Amino acid sequence: MSEVAGSKEGGETACRTVHIDTSVQVERCKSLRRREKIENALAVFGFRSTSSYAKLEFKRAWLRRLSYLYHASQQVARDDELIEFINDRLGSHPGHRRSLTTCLEGIVAFLSRIDESLSPGVRLIRLQSHIRYAILGAYKWWDCSVTHEYAGTRCKRASEQPREFLDGRIDVSIPNCRRNKIECGIHRFFEQNKDIFIKVKDRIIALGDKASAELTRAADIIQIAEDNPEILCDNQTCAKLGDALIAVDGSAMECFAANNDKEWQLLSEVLGKELLNPVRSTMHNRPS
Amino acid sequence: MSELNCFEITGGATAEAQPIVAQTMGAPDYSPSVRGYDSTLTIDANGEAAQVSRPAPSHASKDAHGILDQLLLRRAIEIVDSFEGCDVIDASVNLESLRGIVTQLWNSAVGSTRFHQDILAGLESGILSIEVPTPGQLSVIREALTDLSQKVLTQAHVEIIRSEFVSRGFSPLALLSNTEAGEDSE
Image (cartoon, rainbow over all chains, first blue to last red; front, top):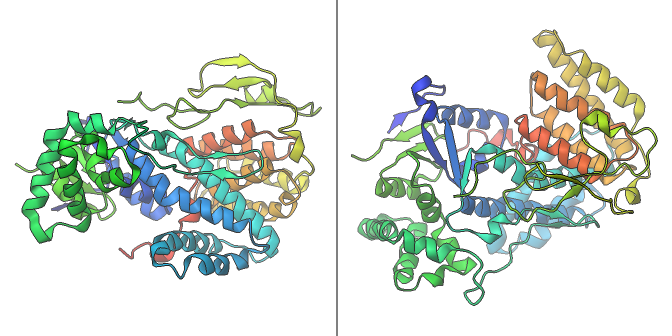
């Protein structure tokens, strides 16, 4: 592992290519200070790609939770009632913990900017406007943040951008996908890249107990999909293969950029890529 | 492989993006040509093909029942115009004043339309996330302020301003994730 210089290394690197995972894309739209560090690390790459499947994860992990926050903000009269409202509904259920965390982080981030000269009612309108602006502008930001988006899985749900109805409601829903009504190309994508997926599976199995839970789940799914790729045409199943799908989608790139090293070290080794973690400023060299 | 990324007026890589129709709704003081687009221009998902279409009659006018504080807006535009040639200290002072004005604009924005509120949110998100604005950023900030002084705005105004903010490097999600306390927590 080596430290990454935070600036461009010269003209020769201008055409270097990197494939960016959801974990880095999420960090890229965060605070200026964190973003600057990441952008500097990515600046050495003249061509930056991501995967449409990463966009689906982004939508699921962040935009959908912001949408819940938006909906919740419409149920209260003052901004200071919002945290209590969300806590009441999400706080007691362990399965909602991550959603709760995202919502609370969003509110806290926003409240840190609050101006006490505004009344609670005005602040609530302000918060709602910002959430709406964030959700509806997110796909534009995503598109502008990369040079190219691979869409090997032809994920229909990723292509459905958030939209606003005339009555002000926002649609960030991700309807279920079912094998009896296939609308994407994930099964064909798997078939076309079956050899790579099997290599990933074999490497995960070789890791044994050292493999993360996410990788172990991915290996199980690959095992089943080897004989029946259409099993992947189900939103609950394909989600378990997330990082592997994103990595294989960007296999033409020289380098991967991710912030979840446990999974991506293995994926980059199998696919013979360098791994950059621009959040921690570390680089794992390409395996020889 | 999808097509190479290009800037899209209506956003998103999907070909299913709905066309956005810019409308003037008969506002006498509104001059869309100044903005560089036709008042009945339909912008497709690629931001290229354009055709004349008749706007839906009720969409924009339904919410148009208030305007923002014009004095504050004029003051904000004066400040934006004062950035040219100023040093770092002046820029910082100007930006802080601008932030104060934008905050106060929310008082009048409550009685305005959703379109005004969306543009104001974009403007506020932008000016809160920069320290020294570039000329390009100032340009879109000024454009947003000019839009906000209009009585009638449409979804097209919001889409255009949102796109311009994004293309100038502003993240629409920054303000909702800007937790300084968590900066170095990893």
